[in-house]
Length: 153
Image (cartoon, rainbow, N blue to C red; front, side, top):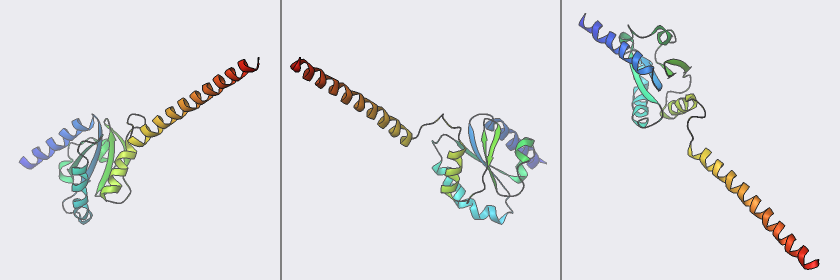
């Protein structure tokens, strides 16, 4: 009976956490062979995800008692990995159970337009410089034409 109380509190706590921010959540079962096989990759993913724009958590099947139905409804088997954005299920991972695949899943699930990565910043900067260079070249051509026109007038 004491176990049920602890299990319930894990589900309720997770419900509260998932309402804020972006979350990658693993639903697993201790008895599940696939879950045990992916656990080392999941642990690496969790440690590499610190400081990123998404949070990572997990919940064992026996702890799901008080978890919101919207989250439980998408668990058809174990392991199930989902992305939850501010309390709403956004996507279910269907790729490989590797660190790289999980990271790609998380990054692709983030809301678009809210975060800029280094590549988009570089592209934006290059476009701005390119426009400035074109403008300065056309200004210098106009100045040259004007000097040339003045000489011949």
